[in-house]
Length: 358
Ligand SMILES: Nc1nc2c(c(=O)[nH]1)N[C@H]1C(S)=C(S)[C@@H](COP(=O)(O)O)O[C@H]1N2
Ligand SMILES: [Mo]
Image: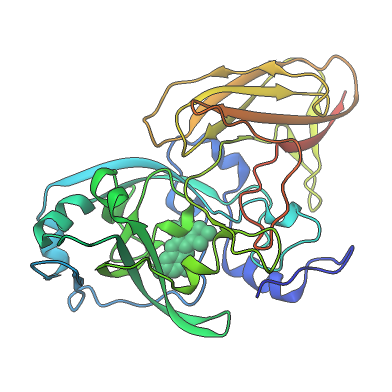
């Protein structure tokens, strides 16, 4: 059961413990089109497993004609694809909800973009020959823990159609290097456009099933539930979000920004799992008035899109900067979040207070 903070309560030790294990993208790292490995956000529910690559096998089974047991060498020997993909945790924005659901307390930084290289999932499944009657594919990680009083491995499923038609890969490289331990060494699933939890790390099992998977991460977690009695709807693709690189210089430790009077260029990136970004609006007065940002180069279907917005504050004073993205499916970012039990999918507009000084 997810519980919430009491009214006005600061971060709890439980949340702090998660926040020191997992980390976000420092927002200034939005400047890189592909996030350097150590700056990509990390989210691990249980412990990072240590995996012996020589003994490792990926088991593909369940409702298939030819179960496969593949070594890393056999997976690497297949035709490789490399995709640049923006990945965001479904819990991004959770700590800005009131009351605050008690879990990893993300603000806005649970995102990153990487070049993932691997073998096409659809090709691997084709080789195993999925039998008639298969409805979903379950992806099992090697990491084990207890969640909702249930001992489990981290496991999630996808509808069979998504796995056969989509761009999903089983990835063994990130930014040209073997996966680092925290990002799933030696193998992880990458499903472009879907929220982070879909991308099962330390992937060891791919199982075709004939009834929908009802494991904890599917049937209980990662659903938008408006209260504890609500069965909810599953989270799938990432809603649009724009983030800006906080301009100027930060105060230590509060991180309040100071920007000099005069012209500057605000910059950031925007993404959506529901279609290309078609526009980004920027406000320098806390959302009262908006102007349209200029979109930068399109770096590919699944990669975030850069944007810039010129600004020229002429006098000292306090401002609240804000930005919001629109995608080709007509989704826009809301001003206020919709509260839900798990604290998911809060893509309300980012607000960055800055102090303009002489
Ligand atoms: N096996 C396993 N896979 C996992 C997780 C996990 O805890 N165990 N966390 C998921 C979640 S919630 C997210 S947001 C992404 C984070 O991926 P990253 O740490 O590579 O950024 O991995 C997903 N895959
Ligand atoms: Mo996540």
